[in-house]
Image (cartoon, rainbow, N blue to C red; front, side, top):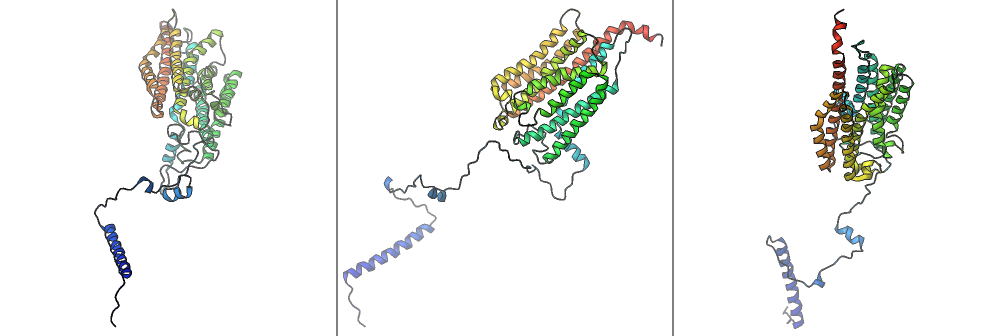
Length: 415
């Protein structure tokens, strides 16, 4: 059939359709083209905006953000272990022993052992005289007292770990607790049960050995047991009431030193003997308090988060450094006062050989502001306490031996 002439309007429609198809093809090519296409400039009002109040629009453009509180909660769950062993893996008895050994925090044992050594040494040296050059010393009572104190100390550490975990203290602090619970190695109830068993065992041994020491030893033992348990137990724990330093000074200073002395002697010969033992116990108590205080300085952030009130968290780092300085220098001031006067046991001044360790600890605590560096200061303070006590014991023994040296031949020759 003969074609009809197209009207001008039809030509425009055909041209428009052709152009639309051509533009579509060009757009597809531009989309698939590897070349960079620069967009033409547009006016500001042409840029699409997103209403800030539309949470639905924002959620379609951005990933969901979950905001959670960092405050400690009362919920308790067993943490996942840091290293997951295969299901068929079984620890050997030696590996379990190593796990528990690290969990009981053996580095802290000198806090309890050194006062017992000093108190027992004082009891022996006071019994040394020209008539009894070898003095009187009961190794059985000494070993029993040492075992009782170690059991109480380890039991207190495990109970402390359990209640700190229950209250959300030191959960994420790798430098704080022993790690039995925090690393998922032992169930919390297992740590608590073993801690209570050790407290009971230490109390039983202490009650037996206290027979030779008298009523005061029973009183000291009861106070020590209560402090060991309530240091961290219950919601009104002593350590959460800013009383940790006071308890540490009393227990690791006069209480243990006097108790060990009484176990060997059965009582104080006179008031002078009591004052002498008390004075020698004070430096040990001050240094032990410095260890506990710098430990709290290290844990300031986690303690504040868990709402645990310690002197360090209440004072801040600046005043806590001042308190640490007073504690360690106070220990040395007492020793100097005991060793300098005329007729005093001057050999006790050999404890000043620990001054290099003291300088390292002081410079460290004045400059440290991170938990890891304060942890190193705490370890240095523990070393300071250990060497200080050992040198003090050596000085007391040498002083007693020198005193009886001129009289030894008269006792040895008849033999």
